[in-house]
Each structure stands twice: as structure tokens, then as C-alpha cells.
Image 1 (cartoon, protein in one colour):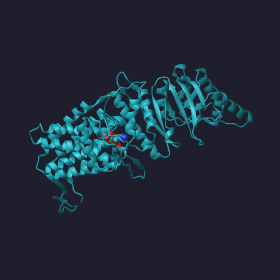
Image 2 (cartoon, protein in one colour):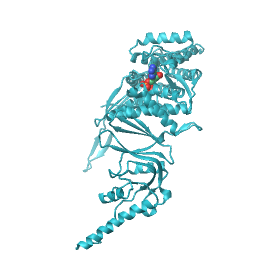
Image 3 (cartoon, helix red, strand yellow):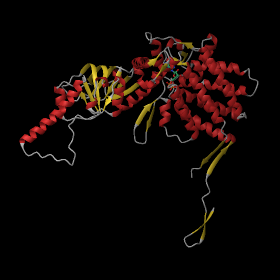
Image 4 (cartoon, protein in one colour):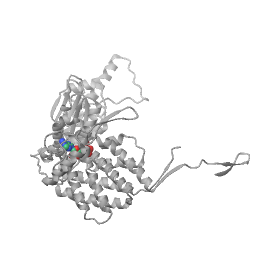
Length: 535
Ligand code: ADP
């Protein structure tokens, strides 16, 4: 309430609408938060695994995305609840750190929340639940290390890497071509990897897509790809050992300034002007030829006369190349961007083994391949596909495969997939629970149950009976003392994931458990939610 005066000095009272706030405290707050988190996890649950469903999302401007990548689904969903946003961030941090397992991490977190809710209802304090979960996550983390296996590969033996990338791709739309795409991803990573330092700079791998062709036409280019063609159809389509002049100056005579006036009143004068213009072009071409350039790449266009002359003097050229691409070409070929013809020198030319123009099908679409560049190990993955949606989803799937290959180069330990690692951890955590005398043991057992949700979701999504399948696999693991038994999603006939070659990286799986536990602990510790009300 406030007292104010109008322009005549008369007092009046401003009654401010009472600020509306809703407030949830204690158990109610925790329950509301848990159900928000669970709702997000429920959406992703059906997308898990090789038989997982895809989601179709439409953005406000009408663009449609079809994907089953957890991080992408959540990123495109317009969630407005703060706790739901935490789950979105959970999936994104898994994507950022590891690049794969973004659906699994959310499913696990959702299940941890669900089991926590039951414990809260039984009167166990949230902090005790959080502590129990923390202990259990450490047990699971160590157990994963224990069941992990080293995974040998080399430059001449890339098969194991390819197999692992295939596991990642098998749950995506692109699984029809998973073998080819996995090979492309592994070769791309190995081309830019620093095996001594055990690191890979994924920025050196450019992923490009062009609508048209088939997914099978996707290829790996050892160099750069630009969406341009030679400026004249009669210029050579293939140049070997190219010396490239990279120019930001236009191929055109200087323009007269406005204050100058050119009077052309006779035919002779016109002829002289024309000859002079031609000489300008000629000099420019000569300057490029003098330093030894066999190809010019220009930021600007040039007119037909210059184009013709370039063709005539046998100097192939590419025009209208954007600034970013120009820079990339300069870096890759070890050349310098030259702003004036006078500054051209032989050492500023970029070098590439082959520059070739390729046309696609019967269309007039052409692209320029700059391969075997002097300086750089940069490679490009060029994706083809029937429509934009398909290309975008393939880009995301390739990204996951690239990340998996990179993770294996960083750390070559693996665990087996198909839920086998989760079941094995669940058994180990369950067994450890008995050693804790306090209330935490309930939480530790709940954690073990929550771990089962991943194999259950895999079974459910593959049309199997979740509970029966899980209990059969679990008892088989214990009886045979074999931590590699998982869910046979594709009905191959064996549930030994070692035989099926379904692997996942150890660091990826460990990260899933750590991140999911962290977020759930954070949600459990919130006991007061103050938010503006809707009206
Ligand atoms: P994420 O985004 O978490 O990687 P995916 O939809 O890719 O989710 O599913 C990954 C899960 O599917 C992992 O638990 C993995 O072990 C399992 N999986 C992948 N391929 C197979 C397969 N052929 N058989 C059984 N499980 C598989």
C-alpha cells in the first residue's frame, strides 16, 4: 500500500495487488519436484535402446525434427518447470562430457527419483536418502571399473572401434547404414587423433550435409569441401598439386570515383578504354601466374570478360567463397589470405594434393573438394540423404559415434551394454547394502532397484515382458557369474553381450551414474519452492 498525491495535491491510496506467490514446503515440495523429474524421464524412457521410439518435435516456426537422441529431444522441448530444466541440463552435461548415453542418464535419474519417493513416504529423511544414494553410486562406480575390460585397437586394427560405434548407431534412425557410418566416424577420428597424447580435437572434423542422394553415399573427405564450383564450365575439373591463391581483392578494374568524369565521344576513345580495361585483367591474371598459382579462390565475383580471360589463360578460378570458408581453406592449405594483387608472393600460396569438382547425379549441383592439404589434418564427413530432417538426425548420430570413438582413444576400457552393466552393478550394490547398519541401507537397496530400470526399459521397448526378462537375466548373471548377460533386444538368440559385440565405454557409463546421482541428490535437498503464482 502506498500514499500518493495527484496533480492537485489531493492524496490517494494505491492498493498494490497483493503479490501472489505459491509456496510449497517440506515433503510437498519434494514430491512436486520428484513428479516433475519423473515426467521428463517418462518421455525419454520409450526412446531408449535399439528398438526405442523416435520423437517428432515441431519448433514454433514450424520446423520439424525427428530424433531419438535424448539431449536433442529435451533441448527442443519447451519445459518451463525448474526441476524439469535440471533434467534437461543433466542430459546436456552428459552430451557435453561424453557425447553418448544422453537418454540412459535421464531414465536412470527418473528411476532414482521414483524410488526415493517411496522411501520418503515411509518416513525416511531426504538427507539420509541422498547419503545412501551417494554411497551406492560409489559402489556402482567401482564395480563398473571392476567388470570393465581393456580394449585393444591400433591403426591397423580398427575393427573393435568400429564395433563400438555400431552399438551407438544401432539405436538411431540411420541403423540401416551403421557399418558404413561407423567406419567413417572411426576413420575420421583416427585421421585427426593424437595417439601419443591420447586426445582428439573434434573441431578438426567438419560435418557437412547436402540434401539429395542416398545415405549410403555419405563419404569421408580427407580435406575440405565447399559448396561452390569452378567459375567457367570449361575450366579443368581436377587440378593436381594445386598452388592456390586465396584472394579477397576483386578481379575488376578500379571504378572511377564520382568526382571524375570520363567522356567517350569517339569510337577510338572507346577502343582505348576497352583495351585498357582488358590490360587490367591481363595484369591481374599475370600477377597470379607469375607467383606460380594454378588455382585462384576469390571472395568476390568477377564479370564474364574476366571469367573468359581466366579460362583462356588457363587459370581456373572459384568465386564468391565466403569469409569463413576462405579462412578454413587458408588454414588447411597453409596459405595466406591476400588482400591485394601486389602482395602476392609464392610463399603465400596454399598447397593441396588434389582439388576436384564433383557433380551430383543429373542435377547441376556441384561441390569442390580440396584434398590432401599441406598443413592440416582436417577432414570432412559429407552426409547425403533424402531430406533435411534425415540429414540433421544423421549429423547427430555421427556426432555420438565420433564422441564414442574419441572416448575410447582417451580411455580404452569398455563395459558391455544391453543393460548388462547395470544389472551387474545392481547385484553388487544390493549385496553391499547389508553391510550398512543405518537407515542408508534402504536407500542403497533402492539405488540397486533403480539401476534395474535401464534393462527393464530396454526389454519393454523391445516388446519383451520387462519383469520376467529382467529376473531371468539377473539370475543367469548370478548363476553363471557372468556380468555380460543383458537384454537381447534384437532377438539375436543369445543374451551374452560379448557375443553380440554390444559395448559401451567405461567412462560413459560411470559418468551416467555420477551425473544422475548428483542431480537426484540436489532435487532431494530442496524443501522449499517459492514461485510466482499463475494468476
Ligand atoms: P543413449 O542416448 O542413452 O545412448 P540409446 O537410445 O542410444 O540411448 O540406447 C542405448 C542403450 O541401448 C544402451 O544401454 C545400450 O547398451 C543399448 N543397446 C544398444 N544396442 C543394443 C543391442 N544391439 N542390444 C541390446 N542393447 C543395446
